[in-house]
Length: 178
Image (cartoon, rainbow, N blue to C red):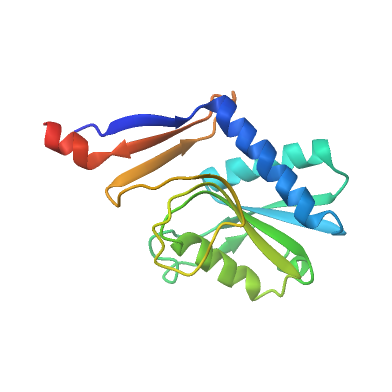
């Protein structure tokens, strides 16, 4: 059964949201000596890569880009992998990036891991915030806040050719229609 899909952000809208998020990051960190953007493996990494490109175009901050890989469904049962040197996190300004903030599980475990390395400051950036929190975390920089039901799913796709998109999938509606 196919889910009912509704386009919620097209490529141009996603680009505008990323441009705005990047400017908010600069505004927040304009006095920082350096900034580390850490993308959550998958779509968060694609989003952070685009944010790094935008930041390098609009500011003179020394920006590092790293990846954090964790098992999103069972983060305590699998090791977390960080692509950079963990010692560089000490005293650094960090922004953790993911595509969608849903329950907060992924971001809270990512933040917990990074806090163990004593950054100076830490913010979170997401393209879409769904407000279905099970964990006490929020998005400091957010492209779109969207009220959804628990049965709905958001699929974000970042593509090399720039044909990015975000869809809302209503699996319950598709099941009732069949």
